[in-house]
Length: 107
Image (cartoon, rainbow, N blue to C red; front, side, top):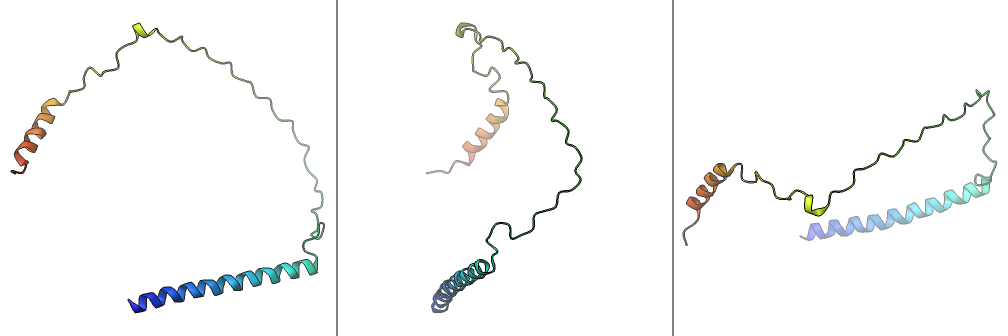
């Protein structure tokens, strides 16, 4: 237990030291880049223009015509939501129910 707590504390201290060093390195890098002018516009050379092929105009895309949807049927003509063949495997389910009744623990 003592070793585990010491290890956790060591990792935490190491993380704090690492974070401090990385921040200092970042600040130093930023200072040198500012002094050397890396942050100015136009420092890096712009690419020279190349002999480009003339661009072709974008092809026009034909807009699809909207399809008409059939009108909804009135509520009186709608079929019922219940499934007619809900108990298709009732024999198989009866078998499993019987097994569960046999296994039921006795109180």
